[in-house]
Length: 413
Image 1 (cartoon, rainbow, N blue to C red):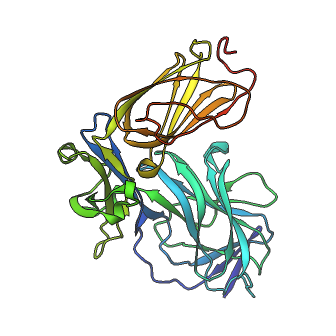
Image 2 (spheres, rainbow, N blue to C red):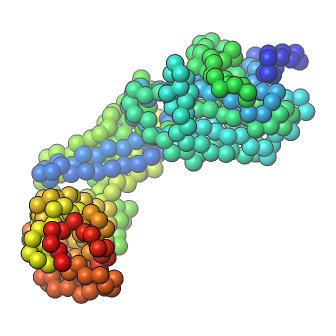
């Protein structure tokens, strides 16, 4: 075995291995999430979803290995969200079979993993977007998750690994030297603040993402979409308790359910999406619960004790029970807030005047178009107060308040 030293880098040459077919991105047979969102007129419902997939440049086999002599050195691979926004949740790094470095003793040792922005000089690695510490407990591919970074379409980012120990206690990084070579690998020595294009390509650091992978990898009818009914969230049931009806198969997301949604009777519904994985399908990924033709226009008029309107206020409706997925927030400088489409159900309503005056109404029940006229108490007693609101709106609710001495009400006291 021949060893080559390059500055502060270890490289070892190994026999060539059989090369796997290269792909810029490949999907795991698993969905990330599914989301349903009716339009403002409740005449159609848009269903969106994303899959789990990995981005990489290597072919899966390492011809060489890379390690720093001193701890603190870093290596990174550059990736792009060229085909749409994506979420980075993890990745993997290839550490080999334990034959390198000589006398390797790196199992149970840690590395730091970073997602770096491309805002460094010249577009090189810059701001840390997220980071985790990974313990290397196995040879070959070391998988990790726990990252949480959203990347906008067209943006680039780096998956970086920091070496924390010297050889033989440091996990190496595999180098794929077979063609094609993409030259998207970067390194930074421990005693340097400057990144540079790596002399060793391609480093075997992969990115695990949620999103839609490279379109050229998409097979026919990639997503199967189903519609779900016959469940009642007000009785504690969810989409998994309902009846699933296959609706369509499509190549791309989002999917718009138009005439079918528009023809449905009032009720609670959901969707599910699964991935076509060549010879099998992923599990169904259920969406949030959506309400159809069960919305009310809610108007909240707020006045101070003297009868005047506050010069600014926020009103929040936070759903509970069968509408727990719904959260509405609105601002007004006239004392009146209008929510045009609120699904029927129980909500905790919070009225806030900037300056930290807050009153909360628990379990407000909304079952029709409603106008609420509320006169703020605005005393300095921090205690629950029962208030009279029409029975339709507050059958079992209480009112809570919190006040300070300078709420933005004109002549409130």
